[in-house]
Picture (cartoon, helix red, strand yellow):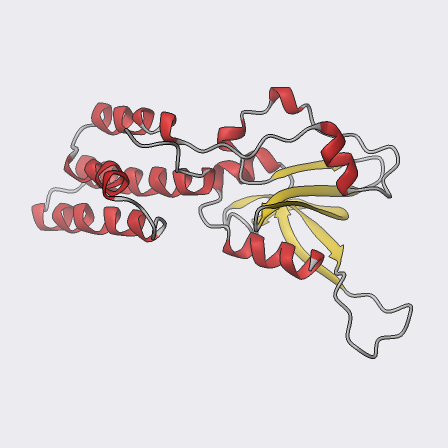
Length: 217
């Protein structure tokens, strides 16, 4: 039996590829097209698991032979026990990440199912601030930035989905060698207003980790 090894963003990737195959099986009549999807979707899943063991590979690829909606749904349910949750955090840990925010309000951690979390994100409407917490290279790090709603839907730079977004801008800690004492540089991107939705959509952490690295390192 495999130990939990599927992170939230990887689970989202699996769901996306399983959905593609299920759609093909339900709507496509050409056997060659279906065969192509059966071949391509597991391949795309495996790209997200470069270090998978033989047992993990077998588990990840077995959906390729399924046909009916019930079979696909059953497969996705079977993966739940292999989901590796976001490492648990306590309120005091989050507050320690943001020492300048004296009255920081953190999310209700007990109400969050950490299996479906890639990053913790929450907003403080009173101060127009957004906060992110993420485990980067084995260390819990935090990013604080200005949160500016734009009252429209656009593509989130993290999950690449069309959602209600806000402009999230944070000041990077990196400085040029000859920078003046008052130098600062802000990095901004459009990001989902609702972090829960973003966590349901995100399928890759490359952009997220690059963004956080640019801010905190």
